[in-house]
Image (cartoon, rainbow, N blue to C red; front, side):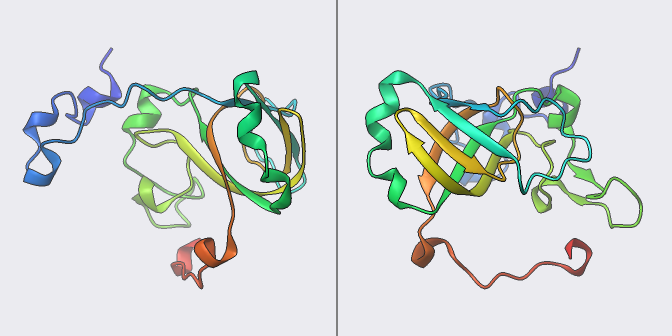
Length: 169
């Protein structure tokens, strides 16, 4: 079976055309999950995530890293969607809604899980922090998803008047 890296010709970073990419590492191997999602949801089909309550259960050694977090109203949650297949990782363009009613666009212009590095980034309300458990609402990740990191949402850094293309409205 051909891996997603081979399909995109990413096996050897030395073949990069742009000189600025020549020193880019082919892999980043020292990432380790700090927590896991617990919410009982195992299927994403047709799901509306806005009211879903989830717990981020942190490894015991990261409990001190949660000190001071409870004062924030929202979090960035960065997860690893490891169930994305090699075919999904090799996908570079798609119709965002799954149908021809939207234009075919690059995966970097969508929120699909199908991307070369299936990393999720979500902003969600923080309900509480209790020990090594952070409770959030609206997190669009299934039960058991590894969490790579979290960061507090800080309005003066993270809030922008953004524009989106008409097809994404």
